Amino acid sequence: MELDGLSVDQAPPISAPVRFFIAAPIFGFIAGVLIYFSDSASLMSRYSMESIVITHVITIGFLGFIMLGALTQMLPVLVGARMPKVAFVSKYSFYLLLIGIISMIIGLFKHNDFFIFLSSFGLGSGFLMMLGSMAIALKGVNNFTATVKAISTSIVFATIIVFMGLFLLLGYIGGNISEYQVIVANIHSVWAVFGFAGILIIGVAFQVLPMFYVAPKFKSFCKKRVVWLISTGLFLWFFLSIFKEDYTLFAKSWIAMFFWAFSTTVWIKLSKRRRPISDVTVWYWRSASVFLTLGSFLWIFDEYFKHEYIVMVAILIGGGFIISIMIGMIYKIIPFLVWFHLNGLGYMSIPTINEMINKNLAKIQFVLFLAAIIGFIFSFYMPYLLKVSAVSFCISMIILEINILAPILIYKKTLKSKPDFDMSTFTGISS
Amino acid sequence: MSNIKEYLSTEHTKCDDLFVKMEETANMSLEEAQKLCKEFMEATEHHFQIEERVVFPKFEEKTGMVEGPTQMMKHEHTQMRALMKNMLASLESGNKDKFFGYSETLMILLQQHNMKEEQMLYPMMQQHLNAESDDIVDMMTSMKTEY
Image 1 (tube, helix red, strand yellow):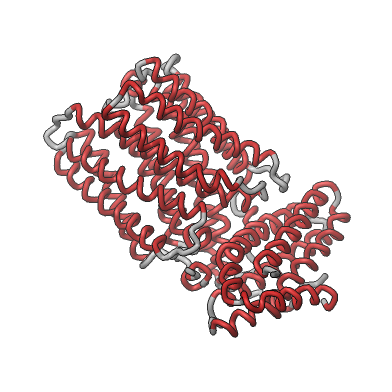
Image 2 (image 1 turned 90 degrees about the horizontal axis):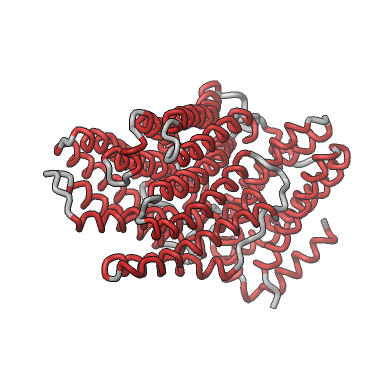
């Protein structure tokens, strides 16, 4: 049985996840700026260059970075798997991904083949380095829990979508986009949202909801079957969308039903949580649950409206559901990481995790984020809302960055000032 | 046959119950919460003692893994003891914000600790100490009166 995760000196260095977390809101901000300078007509089409670039700045620069950062930290804790050479892999894959995403923005907007090629190299090598390292870590796990299965499945989907993404990106060199590439783009996006991000979130929720909120554990059926059932639905949808397009609604309903069931379960579990404390992270889980429900149903109905609402589905699920969960998670993870690492170094008189992030600032950030997502949705009918929503989104990202940096500055300051070690820990408890 | 994993996991749940009750009470009365905090600390300390005095040494003896996972778990016990001590002190001084700061920190530390034990360490212990499972559970039960 793999027990490396239980060894303190084998835990990943704090820099491994943190550099991803610090970079994420910067890309969120860039996406907001790009939305501000776009018009809602261009954004209505999922295949417009603006939509493609903005989508990837968010999915890779924001969501991808947070997911990869969180996984480096969570694999040892949640599943007892240690990524080989985690410090090296996380550092170099981060820089490769950074080069990749920036080159992608330049390459696609400027139709520059060199930057598109550089982007393919950066994104391909960066993602595959991280995913490969995670796959090796998971291979050594003998206790194959529901979370391990979900994370492993999501990594398989992630690897496939990376190759699809590279194929699509390199397709822009020369600029001839065939109908075949449109089919690949469709599979790439659905598998990225439901296969990679969706299954990953479900698997992590199995552990994290009971852990953070003392919520009831997920039912055995849910833990044993849901990932398998969703994956089946995604493969079924893949075959139907290629060979029997008229029947894709069946597979879409199948996938959407399980995600709707998941969002309802999350809501119920939070309502039944034994710990009554409510903070902004609970609000994020709840908003994610609502957006996922709306997005799942709209994805089905969109089939009857010639995919007129697909961008709205993307905002609801990609923005409302996935971004909400990511922000909710990092608000919990970063202060704990800082506390855990400082404490592990022997610093006992340090702020508690509740004191590291300004609660009011976190609430303002949530409200601005929520207003932005709702504004983006309604901007389809009221285009004038697009700019104000983009501003709201940008400000929420600036505040998020402040909230992420606050605990990290505490960490840096503590290491720099080196306060005396508090030896009271070793004097036992007074009861 | 008695099961080490089940026995220790049940203790985690009992401690969680006391923790939740303590936090609920602290929302209304810090004085009332002090009593529950002491109860929670005693139950948790009892659980730590069972692990550190009975089951960890048996496991270390059987596997020879002295500096491995048990060491990490003992390190986290030390961290939690300090947090519990601070939590009680903040209740005694009537500082509600501090109390919830410590309780939030302890909660996450405790839950991720329990998760590592229940999903990795206990199954491994059960596997290695299966033949002595009954005796070990008897020893752990007898510590209830002793501690």
